[in-house]
Image (cartoon, rainbow, N blue to C red; front, top):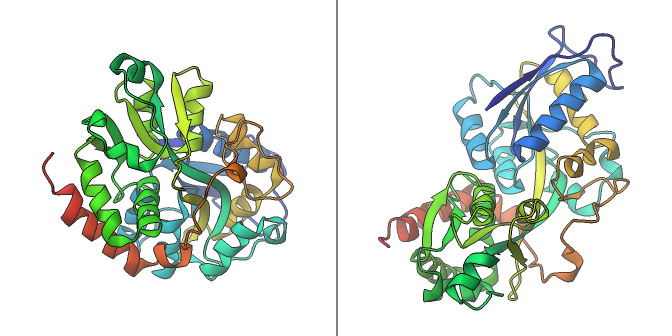
Length: 339
């Protein structure tokens, strides 16, 4: 979906590079659409720079940047799981940049920048998990799942949704998490067994959370903050941090190489790293952990300090070769199977 927001005239522009004569910025946005809208509307209100926004999942944006490499249409990529941002950085699809805000970020966000040669930066953190519809579970008299191992039980035949890792950063995080948690052979054996219980591979990583909330599926694998949005809205969704441990994302932001509006893109980039702007996520009911150490962590945010998080190897699993290899293997060995 494309959103164009017209700026009010006469508003001050943030300190930093002077905006281009066109005074606009084109944003590919990979957070939830309500957050995307809040960000671009607030940016225009603050700076007077016109913002054109397209919302797509992280995997879709990465594919689009590759397709548009010789003639980029976007100036900046905001949000979405960090692995495709790292792959885009490795392939030279994004520009290196050190923001004046960099030193104010948490170490995990700075490491994301360092790994990429400063071609991307962390803007939030969120843990992977799953959520189930409590009403459907009770109706079927199924024991509440607490672990990844529970999801391959026959109780959940045709009752699970997860996104396709080719289009979704969320689902690629799950694929890479399983490999790191179990070892590759055991992970693919697990994913094959899970496949029997999957009723749909969605395009968007947040879609399984919505489907579980609406009773369209019993269980959705998603980032816990996406499930939390549905639970806070009143849906009968229980959120689980799996007992074996789980992976996490560092949602990222990148400047597009060869962008038509590089100066306004840098203004947006610097602005998006400030504490005030990082608070916009919670305002739009998105409860990831912000990367600026001066930003308040929303009290609703999942408590990652109480979870068993794996030591996620972002450098390896965000690399072009490893990501391409794992996706091809998943397509061949998992997705192609009948159910």
